Length: 301
Image (tube, rainbow, N blue to C red; front, top):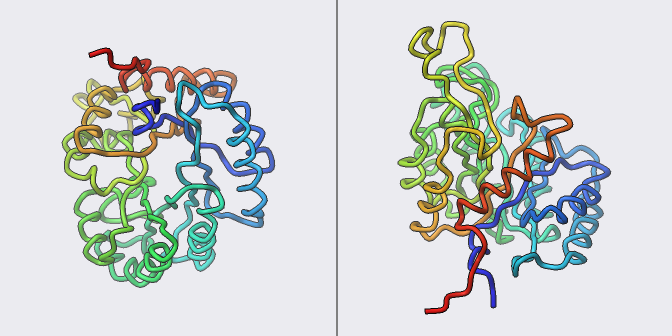
């Protein structure tokens, strides 16, 4: 029988480069159930068809683990499409290539008019993403905007407006398309001192992809220095090592009827990095699988 845990897969994010398929092959043996391939700020000159074929071969050759066959969840590039024609072209290329990768989610930044308050980017966002949303809809693809502030604020920034609910609502109004949604993670909300779970309950129906990344907030530092006192008050963590209750998070998703992938976004944890990177990611995989309910046991009742 099909494992019901396949409704929410636990995977990881893999950078796009010449060894991507080899990395996927090795990670499959660790039990990862899904993969997002990310291209940094630009797709560059990578041959998407060749990369897609190489990754799909590895997925097809791997025996399903516990009844859950691994799959591609999303592909993404993270330039600023409101200022860069190259970034717009990257969105177009990835939308066109999604089917070859076997996924229907393309992710990235919503972009931003540099140095200006968030609302001053709404018009430009509409100009850029109305045609991209139409292109995506024609191909059965959904567009997911990451909720990372990229060190920006509401008043000024250089990369992304999609980091707060007020902006999300304006974006959904500006581009009225059912393919427009979010690539969400609790980390960025915790870094902004937002409780992620009420937000998740409200927006689960517009979240297409989740990054498995957490944060630790140092409340003693905040009580002593505030958030503008020059002392770091929070830092990114691998799931299982931060403040998020992932059991509640996954329960919230399931109660909302959400289906998709939580892909661990590594290379941020201050402890589980360098020689401990894969160790930390596998620990996060096992933690999230426990939070999802542990090993599936067929019902005997």
